Amino acid sequence: MRMVFAGTPLFAIPALETLVKAGYDIQAVLTQPDRPAGRGRKLTPSPVKTRALALGIPVHTPENGAGAEVVVRALNPDVVVVVAYGLLLPPTLLAIPAHGCLNIQASLLPRWRGAAPIARAIEAGDTETGVTIMRLDAGLDTGPMLARAAVAIGPYETTEALTERLAHLGAQTLMPVLEALCAGRSITAVAQPSTGAMYARKLRKEEGAIDWRRDASALERQIRAFTPWPGTRATIAGVAVKIGAARVVDAPHAPAPGTVLTVEPDLVIAAGHQALAVTLLQAANARMQPARAFLQAHPLKAGERVE
Image (tube, rainbow, N blue to C red; front, side, top):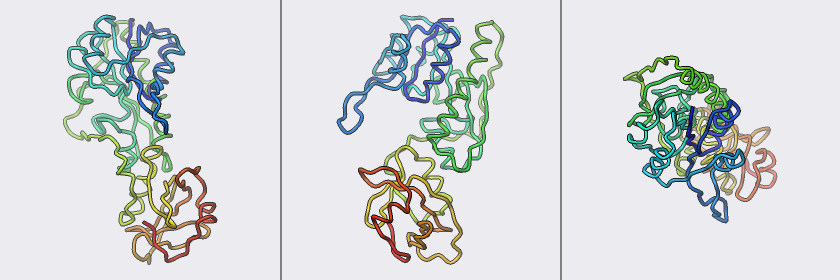
C-alpha cells in the first residue's frame, strides 16, 4: 500500500514510527514549513520533519492545501494518513487516494472537533476522552468514523501528559484499520451522530490569565489544560509567574477571591468558590519550582492579595 503521511507536531511521531516499523511504503511526508522558534526566532523544522529525515523519508513542506495537492497528485498514493497536520486539505486532494485520507483525531468524535481537543476536554472537566480514526471529508472533522478507542482522563493529568498517551493510542488504533484495507476486508464507516458535536477552538495566550473569581475547580482544570502552553499566569508577591500545578482545597469562610489564606505548609489562595493550593510556580527567566522555594525569595503573608 503506497502511503503519504501528513503531520507536524510531536503528537504525530508515534504514528509515523509505527507505520515505518510495520513496513508500510511511505512515499513522502507532508509537514508544515519551518517556523521561527525560541528567543532568537530561528527557523526551526517541525518535529515530524526532523524525524522523517532521520528515517530517510522524503519531506515536502507546502505552504497551503493547494501545494499539498500537487505533491499528493504526483505520488498518487493508495492512502494518506493525516495526524495533526495543521492544513485544511481541499476536497480535490481527498479524492485522490483510493482509500481516502485517514485522520487520527485526539477525541471521541463528534465531541471536540477542531484544533485543541485534548486541552478543551481537560478544561471542560471531561472524565473520558480518546481517539477516533475517521475518513476526512470537506467538513472540519465531520467525516465518517472507522474506529474509536476511549481512555479515562486522570484527575491530575495535564495536556502534555495526556497528549503523549493519546499519541500512542492513536497509532495503535490506526493499525487494524490499515491492515483491513491492505487485506481487502470491508470496514464499516459510521456517520458521526447529529448531536453532541463540540468545537475545540485553538488556544490563545490571553486565555492563560487567572481570574480568582472563578471556582477553584475551574482554575485547577485551567492550569492542567494549559500545560505546557500557553501556561496559566498570575501575579504573586508582585512577581509575574506561571502556575505549574495546584489542587483544590476547602475554604468555608474564605474572604474575597485572590486573598492569600495561608503560606504554610502550602500557598493557599481564595477563589470564587473554595480555594487553590498552589504547589508549583515559575517566575520569568527561572525554572519551575515548589511554591515554598518561591516564597523564600518572595515573602508573602496571609491576608495579602494576588492578581
